[in-house]
Length: 521
Image (cartoon, rainbow, N blue to C red; front, side):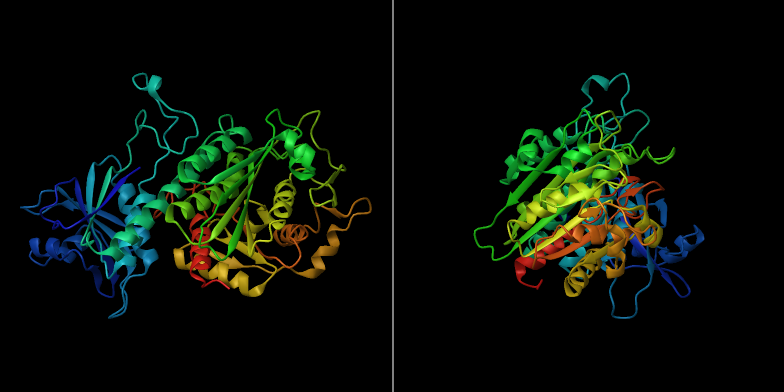
């Protein structure tokens, strides 16, 4: 993990590989942002003109490198675009700082140390820069080896990045926040929070990126158990025998076709002064072939990411524990591998769920809602103040909202709004979605209590309506469909890497913080 320090050093005196400064897009050209005064002065006040000559505009994420001026200990200045220059007396948004820091950290992969001299108007900005830099520095290279280091390569899903492999560069080793006030309690707290959240989010990314031959339900459960011991979280793992005895027909039905048996993992973080209890439920399909309803060619290659919801829940619970939040948080990881075989659930089969309801399985590729249904009912038995489930659930949500925005559905409009607001506050893109009652009829089954499929149009909303059936009466609930942003198949941007992104981790942590402070309902 990239090291993070608050530094009192000036930009010219910092010994490292680079100094990172911000540049904004002004009405008449690039504008050097606050924090870079020493650099600009060393260029005789002409830094903006030099950057413009080099083609810089200040556009978001744009990176421009130039030699450091005489007298600087670091040999390189890296100017990163912050986007549009804010209005007078208005600062840069936390998200603009996060994205700029992330882009800079990615551009400096392979470097030992960089000083970040981005504009800081307070502790919150320091936290945003720290978080962006740590997330942007992420690299998953545990499986890249060469002859020299192959014997030392660690290919197990342990949540830590291995050494960089053949033809690769390791992540930026150290980030020094210039102007970060290391003796200021607020700055120190903001940076410590950023480090805890970023480290756990990056652990979620590691899990998502780990190949399914190394991360089956049992291996995922083992990672959760190890983290529980490390951070004082109680972990309970239900194996196939316990699931059978308990009547978890949804999880067992989905996992029936795989040689890797399913698991239901419960993580319990408790605080002695907690007044509220949140439950997070995550879909954890460690590989999704579609089962008997096999996915078409071209849709299987990234299906290791179908456990992104469980990874997000796991990371959020551990982060809450590390932050010592005054709220009880329970995480439920519904883990299974969805494979076709002679023992697999067939279209037309009827499963008896943990709640006692029966479900006619019309499509075995609509499996996420089946494992979530059992976990939602299990979570409901503890009567939490609210339940939030997270899942890469439907392609329909990707069609509706694209690759960077997750949908939010809920049985309470105020809570849905609170979730969307929490996501916006931490820089995650979300959008409120309805649960139209008329779509429920499409899941009526002549054979069972409900079918796992309904109308094709509005399929993401139909899935939400299905899940609602398995939430205990009177319990506030929200459903996050992260199918779009959970796995980035395109190029990296801002602090978002290619591959697993850790989508919704920060939203869940923010919800826990708001609940702990009494500001969420």
